[in-house]
Length: 345
Image 1: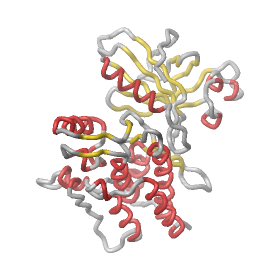
Image 2 (image 1 turned 180 degrees about the vertical axis):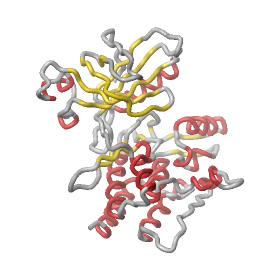
Image 3 (image 1 turned 120 degrees about the horizontal axis):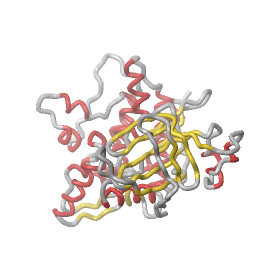
Image 4 (image 1 turned 60 degrees about the vertical axis):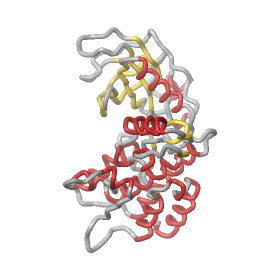
């Protein structure tokens, strides 16, 4: 789906709170900023409707295919991207296109979007802004939750670890089984939303498809290998990046199992709060790249491990440096279901 340009859009004082933004024909009030990174900002917004008694009466309800994505309170998350050049514009358009491809309970849906032209100001040189509208999940990311738990010296239970991880795998299966298969390319705790539900397992939702691309790529020259490595250095977070994206051979077949490596790192992070290779960043003379390429996993020391050996072996199975030895997502789901049956209460 192409990007729309709307002359109705106007954004006033959003960085400091307040103000309205139009996304096509629907108006939203900025409530507060939720986060930022690079040239993107995320806001909590509330739809402004004439009949506020029901979300079903809103203008957005006429556009959204799945009513479960509508908020009873009319609140949503809006990502605002500042676009400085045509390259950034192409990247945003691709993120929007890819986001509309998928429909799965464990993948964050894009509800609406708009790209508008703006006048450059003294504060910035951008000439366009993109607004992407999503359901809001105010419990934060898996990274947020893990950081808070580490501060309290708490861990997820083995059953919670498996239930969170299984949902993540289910969302990736939808992408990997697409035609053609897509890789997310940036699976990590910071891209997983976690919503706590009373009497249920936490809901895990994979988000941010800005790095997602068709997964299968043939590399047949040193130049192509270097281009892939350069792309990966910009789009794939280093502690979760697969070895073949650090040091790509000149003759290689890249596929969706780059995500399986990231999954293994993420399962470790659900358990311990960090990637299994981040220890290298704190060592004198340590190299994150070498630790990853050689799959030098360091398990937390201590007389009592909070998780069973089965989970550690599961992580190791996914962290195979040779991509041909790495399992596919369907294999992962079969195994995680066995572990869920074994360890879930």
